[in-house]
Image 1 (cartoon, rainbow, N blue to C red):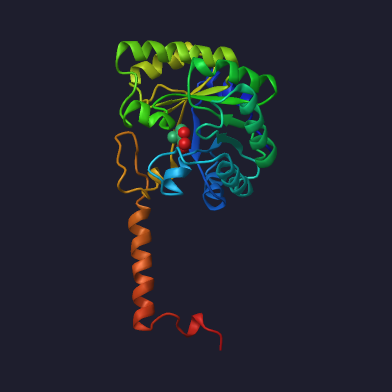
Image 2: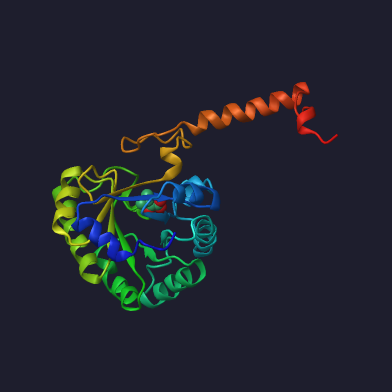
Length: 267
Ligand code: KIV
């Protein structure tokens, strides 16, 4: 398949009212499934820190980690539109340092875009990247890299002042050249209003049905993170149960001597 999705496709899909489908991947195997599912874009999220590496937060994830994951994902989905998260402190220090880090992502992973968490304070950085030809996706609302500042992973922007700040941030990111925005865990009504007020598409996660597209952390929708059950995740499979049962059967077969059988052995 040729590379048909671009940042312009994102805008066109919004204009035409076609919902944008985004899912996360961290490795070659998952990327192959997403490619087969014909998603519009794959996000190599720094949620890798939690669902791949088992950290409590995304904060420990490094730029080298993200590049490693993105290269593996690219091999599994050679032609998909690929967005790579910039990890904590890889984009906050200065626009110049951010440019060097985003440049590494673009050069070393063959991604088409990077994602950064934060609002108006990042406008200069977003301008610097987009001015150098690096497409940027913004991320507002619950921005997990700020979990300690927020004091948890609760709903964001339910109070009027934070909602107003989010509206301003969204416009600032659009003005700085972001091609799209993730809106995470904010009230549906606010997400719909912000989406309607922007030219660029919004991709929601826990932001209701009014955004221009949806993203989920793929292991969540596959039921591989059984202890994480937020309201906004719909489970499409229970892989946790399936994997546990398969592994238990294997162990039992080995222990009772029924694996390998003759048909699984070389004469
Ligand atoms: O890291 C991630 O997977 C994300 C999505 C939840 C949007 O940022």
